[in-house]
Image (cartoon, rainbow, N blue to C red; front, side, top):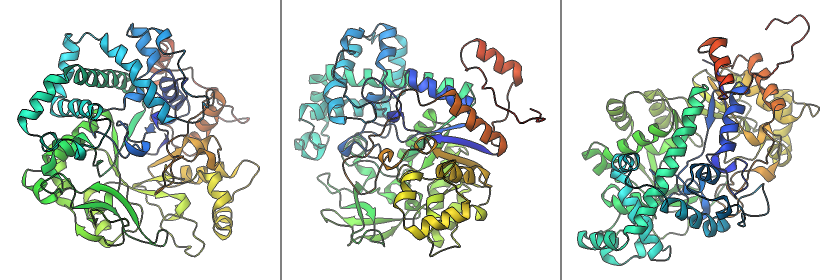
Length: 524
């Protein structure tokens, strides 16, 4: 099946309250996707962000980001008064996110909403019970972080850092109101998330999540499960994650995440990973696994080093891990992020799993290598193609900053012209390719430049901040995308026919079908 999708983080949706949310703008975007002939909405990780505001560094791999809870929807439920949030300062630039301002403002409002929740309701109690295996540790972790002024858990008092049972019991009693707030915030997040996912699935849109291979060191995951990671007796990492030096970085990349204790994980049947992946598939229909090559071999850097120069490769769990996942959870819809320097071992692992890998058009046009596997004529159907990902510049940004010979090669190969916009020509080559799924960044569909880049790897500041402006998801743009999907046979398969769609339109679930202009004599 030939499908198409759009990559747009929740954070980047338009909103008057500082960041995109799961409310009205998200519902409108789902409707836009359906009208535009798309079948997939790819998102970035949706967990609560920590240092650097990166969605790939979260306080919990299981929790949802409280920033994404929609305040207008809470007001509709009677959990907030609009006067409690509308007059507040949410920033003066609708195109960017001010995370510092959000941190100072958002939680005070959410506390008011959570204080009005009926915590004795069957629905709330059922949620807490179903999520108990991670929710209790997460709520206590966040309450303790507040108590200790946001310090990493490795700087907490020893009895809490090492999770002595008596100290944990005392903390739960003393912080019961705080842990109640964090449970309430997760309940609100998951309730809004499930409503949005239900709407998307009803319209034939599947949600693709993004699972970072590693978790943040300062997270409830590591604090509550120290035996699953390579830590010393005091809870500090012995080695950390990163990438070796290469032609782009003489020092390599020092990510700093604690590494998994794969041998111990194997002994208990990878139980933590099974819970993690199962939780993701309760949220998403498809899952992209980031840094897939780390399952074949991972780069380990001595803890405390300032660069990645002294790291070394160690073997990962390999194909055995994915066999265990398939046996426990069944065959799932997974995409492998297999970008970067690939060895024969990584290629063998990818083939063994049967997962589709990724192709990125911006990687195809190195004028020194005209036989690149990223060139569209070399694709097989079993892959997912992007013009660029969240770690790349936008198409127009790349065209203005890449080496001139590379840009000239791209223009020649893709037959690009400035009249329609270079971005449309590059996206069209992805849609025309043999790839089963083609996913474009929303910034590229909008024709934006480097000012809209989501992330520049190995840098801090100015990342994860871009937001779409209100009104950009227009019927005209949906109509144009729908036409492209029709031309390249990427329209979703019809389910239920015209009668089913008409019914949804009348119910207000789906916007009216866009009027697609036809050429003279063309049959619909």
